[in-house]
Length: 141
Image (cartoon, rainbow, N blue to C red; front, side):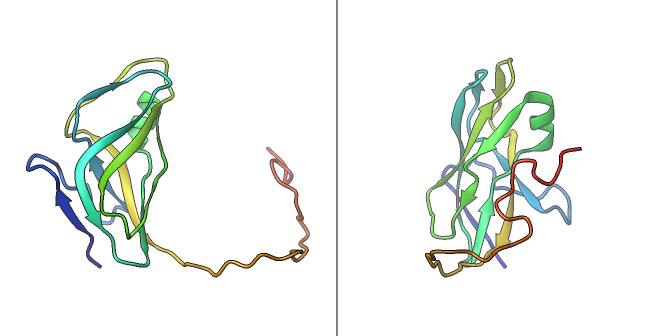
C-alpha cells in the first residue's frame, strides 16, 4: 500500500515513521503557536494526503506530549476521500501555556483497514448475559 502526501509549502514536513515497525507515523506542525490552558486549536501540518479506499488515517496523541505537557488530540479520523490540508485538533489539559514550534512532532498517525457495514434499524437486539450494563458494571478494581 502507498499513502501519498502533497506538501502545501516546500518547507512542510511529510509525516514519517521514526522507527521501522512503528504503527504510527509522526505528524509535524507547520506553524509555531501557543496553546493556552484549556484552549483547543486546529494545528496546520502543511500537507495533504491520499489514502487508498478501504483505509483510514487515525490521529493519536504523542505519548511524550501527553504525559509531559497534558496535550490531547481530538477528532482523529481522516477518511480516504478527504483531500484538504491535514490539521491536528489539539487541546491543552494542563495549567501551563504550551509552545509548539514549527517542525515539532505533534501527533502520530496509524493507517488502518476498515469495514463499511450495512446499517439496519431494528425494533429489538439479541440478548446477552451483560445486557445493557456499562460504566463499571463488570467491576472496578
